[in-house]
Every structure is written in C-alpha cells, then in structure tokens.
Length: 147
Image (tube, rainbow, N blue to C red):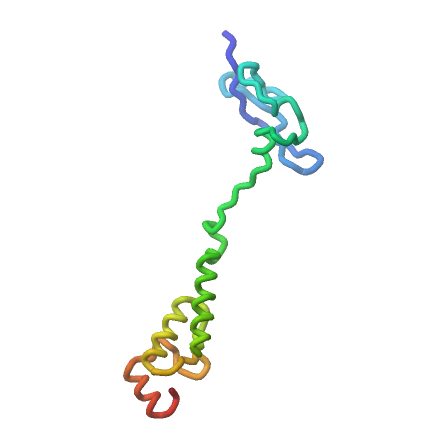
C-alpha cells in the first residue's frame, strides 16, 4: 500500500551564507529519506516553484518574519513605558526642588513623603535617608536647622 509521505527534516546543514538549511527529509510514516521535501499536486504552492525571494509570495514573506518578545523580554530590566513614567516622576520631583536618592518610583515616593513631613524640599545629598524621616525626626531637623 502506498501512502502520501509526511515529511520531516532529518538532517540540517549550512549553505555558503552560513544559513542553517535542511539537507535531508524523511517520512514520519515509513522512514524513507529524500533530498527534497515531497510536494503534492493536491496542495500546490507558488513558493515551491522558485528559489529566490519573490514579492507577494506568502511563503517568502513568512521566511522574513522575526519574532520578538518586545517588553516581555526577560533580559530587559523594565519596559519602556515604566522607564518613561519613572523619568517623568523624577523630573516632576526635581521641578519642585526635591532631590530623590535615585530615579526609581520608590526613591521618588520616599523623597516626596519626606518633603511633606519636613515642610520643605527633601535633598538626598544633604539629609538623612528619606525612609528614616518621620514626623519626630522632621521636627528635630527643623529645630537644628537642617531642614
């Protein structure tokens, strides 16, 4: 009984441009091997008729696609949206005279909270750490002239 071969790549090689290319195909049903993937007349494809890129050929188009994880990429530390939001918040704090200890949202929020407790703009370079400033320490800082 003959059957339609269901092809799979059984061996990979490298062409003269160092691109990885299939060099041998095999049938998943019978194990027979071929130099080229079997093509059936019932499912014709214009892509199988040419070896170079042709504009308008869906098969050629698919070969040019590159998948990208975008902001979900685990190697990036933060998304562009988060980065822009942090820098905007930092600029806003600096425009109010506040000098946070860093550009992270946590550092900015702590500096703003410390400014509210002190009644004056917080300066990370000249004052204790923002998270250490309580109402009590703010009162003492005002008395000694630090704030």
